[in-house]
Length: 127
Image (cartoon, rainbow, N blue to C red; front, top):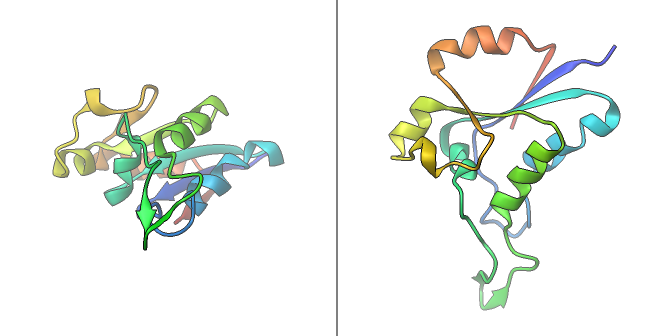
């Protein structure tokens, strides 16, 4: 029987020399292994859900980062893989991010609902 896994991203990895976030990357492969995955963006990782981000053309120490940080594309791909994406509403508000600023398909979750939400999963990954 497949496990229901919640993958919680609280910290951002983009901006280092890697071209993707390892937590986001690993979460995308759960369905291939026959596992049900849900992604929760919390704290600073709620920024991943902001529409219109394009990290191509970034230089670090004078060298172009290839292929560039494709934050929005990565998050949309996760959604297309039937992995629901949720964000903590209060973390968005603390950063001045509005619901209309988000990639389509992202669902809001209040901190007050977090305990009941987490209880429905067999395993929680925290990145």
